[in-house]
Image (tube, rainbow, N blue to C red; front, top):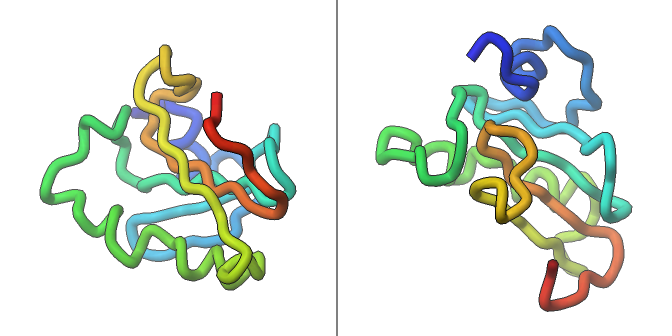
Length: 113
């Protein structure tokens, strides 16, 4: 989608603090962080929500999603991190482009929301 904010970031038309860029996946720091480490992981291909994933999108959910690289980069492999995906407005999805929130750097409470 030409007007999608995250598509523009993926095409590098809008600046972002990119921390991972490999294959079909891009990760960048959230502009409104909810934890000391708050990174958004997106597929470069436009998918509006998690329910739009198909079997052809499997690489997005495989090793290429960046979790290992992000855990190492932010030194949270041992202490842990949370990976969150919101699907739809009632779940809090504010941008209609599939994205995962990688949150770490402090104890995260449960249940969320």
